[in-house]
Length: 528
Image 1 (cartoon, one colour):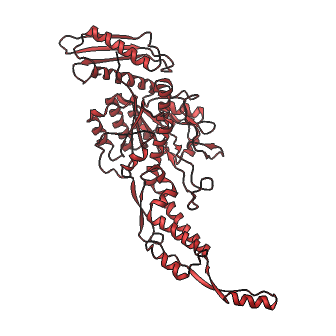
Image 2 (tube, rainbow, N blue to C red):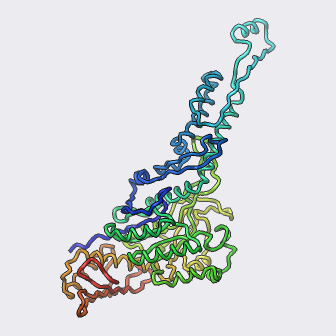
Image 3 (cartoon, rainbow, N blue to C red):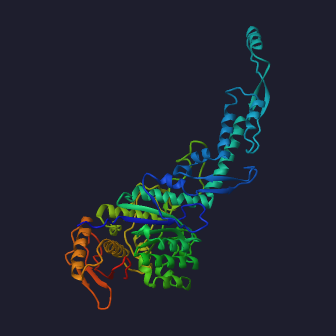
């Protein structure tokens, strides 16, 4: 007997495109280690950045990032006509002396780039200096050299001014919210592909989305059953405590409940009503901090029936080392003014992918001694210590987050990060919900592949055999207390299937008992 394959499929919803005016209605796009650049080329990753006309006479730049390396200053300069011509103008000025170019020739060559700001090259007459030598040497010098020669005046100053033009443009680009958001998302993809075990068994699919298109995009995904059920939903939209975000949480929870698929979202520091994560230490006991009227809707959200399908994380991870003295571009000196941070949802997905790859189940992502991110870029925090995350959260504060319904990303001793504890926003086990999802999806696959005319007893035997193979394929022995029962109520064209078992600690650290009941119908539809 062969059981249907059950890959661990991550569906990522994020602003992958710089402009997505209409809700996504196509199938999700699959990404692996070989096609990130190809996927980027197929999306709209271009935007316009306004600049002062003193810096850029055209008033702005069109920036396109069709590959991951296009976010780097050197490649960005080469791909943009204005910036590339500025760099070529600098090289021309630098070579003017060596090639003994006349002032007129330099000016003529600069005119081939009319879109550049004014670049003035002035020459001066530089008298030759006479030394007190013998008369014969003096006469020979007068014969061999003209009395005066032209030399560029302030060549270094001109190149410095051109560098300043390029640097100012880069500052605007790397401070632009659209550029930062786009790079942060794709750095998250790269992190997941590199450290999340993405392969044939662990898959990543993406759908472009933003706050304005979220509702309709979720509806479109529900309307397309051909895409198959995801195993994990990752939502990279920065949430806070506003009505709009709380409504988005609710929509995602309902979407997850319909698909029987857990979802991960994240909150910014604004959710806690602080200026930055550096102010976290100023807060009192977190659950008490969130008892006020401002969090009434949040507490209501935690009580809805679908709340156990959502986990909320926080504490962004540094996306890459900033450009500056220790990471200087080759083309021009450029020091980045702000750090680039990636949403922690990508880190959580990495840990679940690692768990599935190493143990056969994504449920052990909190085993931080073995399941962790490593080799992360570091930044010196306010305490003067290197850290890969925005905040360094201690054990006591971690427990406060868990009690409040959040599972933050925790920085390790060096360049690592992990999740040592988990919860859903309903204060229930998120790992348990992941296990329920995996088992439920397998049973739905069985329903699609089995004959619908099986009698209750035959169905029970077939399901037990299939379930045993499914469990063994994960590398673990079948639970000893596995029980499957099938009954057919009168006047109903369906069979009631009940499954109960207690997973081992190697599968679910809490060893919480699983109890499932659903109707086995003669169609692909099902009720829970």
